[in-house]
Image (cartoon, rainbow, N blue to C red; front, side, top):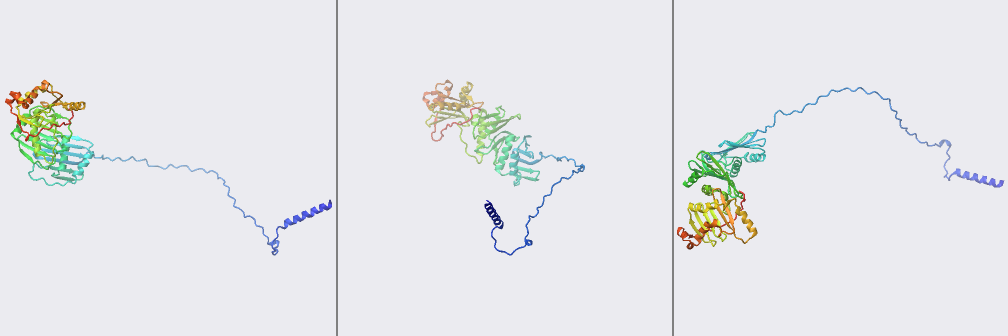
Amino acid sequence: MKIRNCLYAILLFSLLVACNSGPSQPSQPDETAENVSIVLPSPQAVPPTFTPSAPEPLPTATIIPTRPPQPTEIPATPIPFDDVVITARVRIPAVGYDRRLEGNIGSELIFVDETAGKGQFRAQQAVILIELQQALKDLVLAPVPDDCSQCIDLEVIFPLDQIEIRGWLQDPTLFASLENLFAITLGAHFSPDAVGGLRRAASPYAPSQTIEVQADGTVFIWQGNQESIVSTFLASEALNTAVSQSVNNTYQTQYAVACEGVPLETLMLKSDTGGVQTIGISCPAFTLPLPLLDLYVQFDTLMGEAVLDALPAPETGVPLTAVVQFQREDGALLLIENDGALTLDDGTSQLITDTLGIDQILSLTAPLIENETVSLGLSSFVTEAEEAAEDDDQETAVLFIRGPEGLYDAVWSETQSNEALAPLNDLIEGYLSPESDEGGAEETTPTSEPETSPTPEIETPTPSPTP
């Protein structure tokens, strides 16, 4: 046992020596203990520790004086809405035309008829004011010729821009616009000396046109696209007679139905006592009463001869000069005009012409109006449309009569058995079969003119049935 313990002690000692000796190193010179230094870590900076200081009393607040708020300055001068920005004045001395307009900053327009002493006020006219300024500000006009009372004299003033323009207006488009603007606001113009006149507004077929007959018989015709009045002459005896017979009667203020493309018209009549009637007319062929027909037809003829730059207007279903138009279901067409001229088409393009007296025409038309066989309102157009929808093959008869209140009409599907229409049927049969009616053959002699007389055409117009 002792020997074994000794061996264990020797072995343990050897192991300890071997561990301390470490790995074998190459041979180096011996170093003394003085040459050996131990590396120690460098000291690190220690962060300072925050120590709050004792609170100090704050100084007493000092009140700083402030400037009181100043009120917003409102300008003492308001916006001058009433200041005039444009003035335009148009004169035609020959017919007493003198009309003026003024526009201000507030987009208001004042229209004044200097001759008649009347005016109109219109608000919110900014668009018109802008157009007037654009069209008139750069206008260059030639001087008005001396002693030219029929020339158009235009004066334009822009007060704020200190611009004044005056001279002879020769621009047809510009004058047409100004004349139409004045007519819409102030109405049609007729000179103080006029005893009768008619103004026709512009339409798709012709410019605006005015005719007037003055007390001394002078006739003026002028239109909106001319630089001066070029038609001046003395009225005929027939025209003077028609005016004198019309001015002292009383008429309605309006004779009108809705007709597309037909211009609005204004008829003026001055009585012997100085009273003035102004009558509105639309679609005259279907509305004019018999007492006005003669005067209107003469006005219409003269205006048609003097009009410039016009297109042919479409014909209506009833001629303007017609007093009676009777279309029977068998195709016969009877037309009696205001001068008594009679035209009968038997339906085979054979025309028979004749002339009737006033008494004969009245004997045919007066009973039909008095018995209400025909009536106002153009009801035949509505009835024809309804019947055509029911039966396309059914033939109808249509009668138009121009009476004291306007154009009367009626429609039937059978006229031969209608007692009220017997006088008209007898008249037609008397021309178609003169040998069967000796009285009719002795009184009138039919004249056939198939080559020289035009065949009347019946076209159904489309006016409104409500006058």
